[in-house]
Image 1 (cartoon, helix red, strand yellow):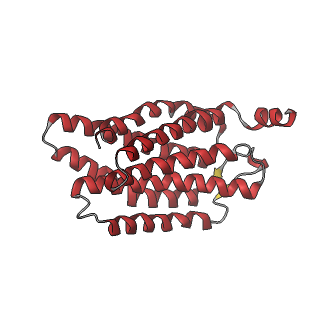
Image 2 (cartoon, one colour; image 1 turned 90 degrees about the horizontal axis):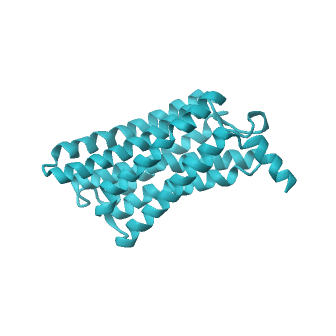
Length: 240
């Protein structure tokens, strides 16, 4: 018990506590709940894809919370990478979901969905092979510090393949919808995904700068995004 308390005092400072256990912890629980609600209705088609996005985030933040209590460098580095990998993977599920809504699952077939998801997943694995891309050990107070090449590669892959196309097709759908109520619902969806993109970019930059003051500011600034994430469910998932 004594060593456990010492660990908490040393390594779980306010910024990290807010980010890991409040922001990410609540996000994980929320996404698990939404995935359950979606799959409860129907576990196929767009429901299955959208639940994949929620489950990726949920499992990612759960792993992140687990390794906060581990002090083995190789294990922590692997689990941190897995956390980030799953968080990024959720982005491609959002894209596939939007593509299905835009063009139907008869055009975006299961085969196409798998090709897009697997291709993105393989490209993401490239992050692991960047030399010293992630440093997380006693010298960093067990907080992740990323190299700029790691951040750059992540931004290029996630932005060009997932975030930018998702934004484009989501806005395209919004402009195409004619019914006011449908446009209103989709507007909530847009707020939700943009909030998630905000969390993705902000957390990535925070880990790269590795500045204590910025980490604290970002931890507080990211809190409102939690509320916005509900809009994804309210705008679309609730209607599936």
